[in-house]
Length: 254
Length: 254
DNA sequence: CGGCACTTTGATCGTGGTCAATAAGTGTGG
DNA sequence: CCACACTTATTGACCACGATCAAAGTGCCG
Image (tube, rainbow over all chains, first blue to last red; front, side, top):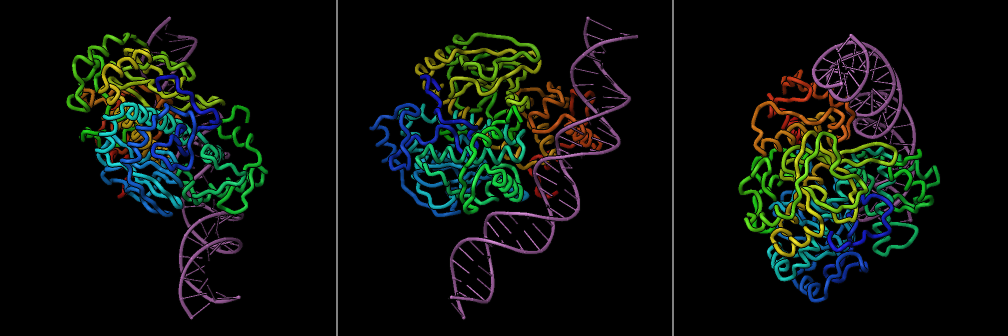
């Protein structure tokens, strides 16, 4: 937003799983401190935020909150992965995104959560009551500005995803997902060439508007083309990132 | 956001074309003053905002700004309709949403606009330079809060649309579009049973991730079922709103 | 009247969904 | 240690929704 804040440089693909500016460590102990990303947050403020937060832990498939619950807290993820989902009246389920250490969840303008959040694997977070957050906003105006930046970035990410869901083929979506996921992990310091995928094929399908079979077939196709290895179904290693980037960006030269 | 602000009551469908809380008149002369919607904005602040704005007018298909342009201004729409679009490298185009009087366009955290905006028909707006907006934020902290609310609502709307694009059938999308569009117009005081649609079938298709032929066929199907009338291709009148709502909400009982 | 942009409708095709069978992995209890 | 149940992944066969290609039809403006 204001102040000519630079967009992180390593964003080669649309942020399909998590907004760009994640990883601004709001209350210490987050898995990744990303330096120089957004507004510099001063230590006194961070200490206040940390003091206001209540730590909590979750295991795989624990809900952080349910769709329809009153939005009484916001959550700041420390370690682990979560996903945001919405359930339709007839039982169809869609996922809106994945969130990682440093991301903020459950910050909404409406009284209730329009979507639920659940942990994918072990997860630690801290949560802050909404009235407490309002108090922090009043005490530290830059914090409110920080949330405005966060919100604007999440919005931009969601709008890019709209384009992907509206116009991308299955292969383009899976490529975009893999790249976006791996970049989000790398940005948080997970360097290894082999990446653990904390989501089932069904989870990925819900995120991309595809069925689990299509996700499986598409990953297999990428494997056959030598674009990636999958030592196990839950791990991936990219072998030809350029080919995937080409696909994932709505490739001009296909 | 904070302060227990009520979500507008007349929202029966997901806001597919425009975020819920549009229509908060930021600089006078807007086609619709919507009372009591969000934070009450005090007159001195509104006067300052109005003074900072520069009025501008557009005709059909004029660009307000292009994808990739530097985000030097934000735009507050007064009258008319605009749409946000993104062009993919290979020429595919997607639309992210439609915007109406009272909506804010072009407010982004990155230096450049990730998407373009164009007028659909005659349009009046006022634009404010970013540095000027920053100055207003400092002078009127509630204005910054107002933008945070706006942004959070736009985010929620975009995320709902993600679910629609990921999981809805063609008929569900078209139904959701028609309802959302008509509700947005009604909320701005356009009461009549017959609504002018300032978008071609191709425009609607780009918004919904469908082709123009599918949009046309779907509208025809609704017409045959007696759910709507279309005195001309560019006008619609709903005859059975309940049936459309049923479809558009991801109907449990189909 | 001609030209043009948009819409409608039809015919056909293809991507991705659905249904189903098998395989592989994981944890539990005998 | 293996048998068993259970979850997840993979692959195949088939199908359907919506895309694509094509041809009229309609309204508007010069």
